[in-house]
Length: 321
Image (cartoon, rainbow, N blue to C red):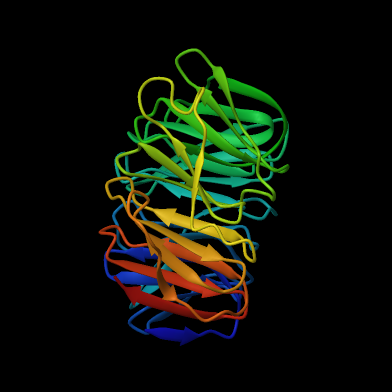
């Protein structure tokens, strides 16, 4: 299934109906052909709604919008004269977190009056819920801050490391927090003792990371192949080397996507190709083998039986695996 959109794709996702694409023209396009005009301006970030029904998007119009096929878009929250830069949603707790400027906000779609706003000294670049959905990590300059999602007045747990941190994720067991950085590296912390994990050696900036194989592997972009860090046992990658699959000297991995409960990894390349592979097996399965514009959106389905992709010229597709 292929698409040709007239705007660049900001994000590719799968809700409980199938593939969904969020676009730079403010629209949300569903694989069945439904279109929702969610924003007056570009979609900057997107996440699947905690219910699994439709997607939640943040835009440069300062609105957080829930889009579903055949339903008028619902504005869930607004930011005062700010872009909404990052969003995450937790099926476990039903909460949605989003960032605007130096503020991290939390809402509960089932409680219209519930909202928490947490302030930071610097701009918040990424947000991520822990697996249970009760705490949130926010990446910013100088590290990350951990907040309890529902507590109004609190001091965050600060995870410090010099530099600009551009995105954040929890490990599936909740034991580690990992950030992408503006320079060519990752950084991580083991939460029980705040021990630092230095994860460098990349030839370019890491734009994308994903846990797979029940959390035993962390895959990242930023190199000629997909980089795999071991997260086995209480020490995670400490004292262990990363491995690489799909190495190709002539190209670079721009995005990766995986599902925690599955062992399959999807990768989108800067030369327009897309492949999927099992890291333990030999060989790559190219679901998009022809070269072209860089892949800017990528998502493996929850059951790891389909992959959605899009390139920077608006071409997109869904491949059944």
